[in-house]
Every structure is written in structure tokens, then in C-alpha cells.
Image (cartoon, rainbow, N blue to C red; front, side, top):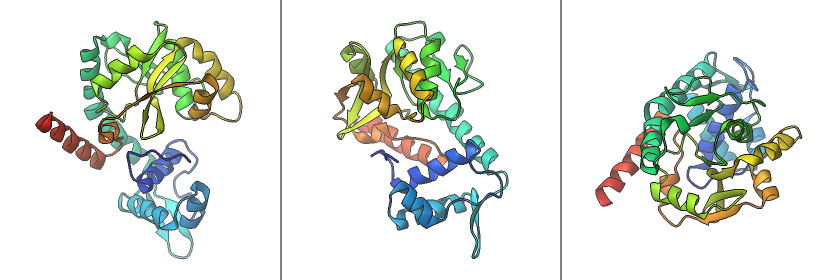
Length: 255
């Protein structure tokens, strides 16, 4: 697993396990990999995996049976969905709309990929190849857009600076242009040409649905971001939203 630089590794591990519960890899009362097994799979320190499991236990996503291991708490999937939708609809989308207003984009230009319901005025497009990660959402979105290119943003990164988005649009010439921060590419903050939908589909029909593979094959250009990396922080839980609010308050105070 490739880890981002903007959040603790144990949190990313916990998020991944939640993703696997959402996609049905693990259902109610299913046994999940042991702490050691998950650490080996993701090539991380066992202590880091312990922190991830402890967090999920506190949130009642998983529970421990002494001597048997960890299992999915009944109703965990619904709980995860409820919390993520709360952050997405109540906090993340308003910030996205604010950024679009700054960029002169109308709500009718928003394509929300991978969700059944979209805010009024937006277009919701389902994944044609579900459960294949971000590449499937990108594929569905590119097929749905009317323009020759799409500004792609993750719904869980609400503080991406408007100035950075303008620079992305200005820098883009063809293919793919994504943000680079601290030497790491951010595949979900970028500009993608509509014609890449075919390349996405060919890759989705294969075994590797990694978005980074598409970047390599397309020879993606990178725009180096030298600002505050905290503004690219992901927000998927109420706790992370509180952190986002603190960052936003700090920026408004010092900006």
C-alpha cells in the first residue's frame, strides 16, 4: 500500500479496513486479518497496526474475541457509511462549492462519481466497474463530462487552495497534470483529459486498477506544491473534520 504524507499511517490503515468493510470484503462477524497479518500485508510496523485496530475498536467497528482475533461488529458498515456521509454532505461539499464559485464554475458542471445521490444541480454517475478503487470513479466521471478536460478533486480534501487549482488549470496542456507535494504525487488532485476514459477502461478490465499506473503510462506532468501540506489533509471522520476546522481557522487568522 502506498501511504500519503498528510495523515498518520495507522489512520490510513484504519481507513483501508473501513473501505474493505464498505465494499463487502468483510461482513458482520467476519474475522479480519490479525494485527500481525495486516502489518505484514501492508508492510508496516506491528505497533502501527495495533494503533489502527485500537482506534477501530474504540469506534465499535471491530471487536476482539480473546484468543480468536478481531471480528467485524454487526452494523459496522452502516455506521461507517453514516459517519462518512455526514462529513461529505454536511462539511466537505459546501467547501467544494465555495472553491467552484471562486473558479467560476457552475453547479451543473459538477459530476459526482461513485455516489447514487448528488446535491441538487449536480450529476451523479455510478461506477461502471465498481469496487475497483479511485480509477473506476475517474473513468465514470470522464465519460460523463461535456468539456475536453476535467478538474479532479477528492471529496475528502476540502481545503485545497484555490490558487493551486488555478495553477493546475493554467499548467495543463494535455493528458494528465497532477499535484506533487514533498516529492509524492497526489493523483486525485489534478486535471485529466476526457480522452483518457478509454485508457482507464482498458486498465480496469485488467488486473491492476492502480491510478498511479495510469499516471506512469500517460506520462503525467507534475505541478509542485510548496505551500502548507496540511491544506491537502484528508477528512473522513468527525475527528478529522475538527482538525480541518482548526487548520482553516489558522489560515483565516494568518492569511
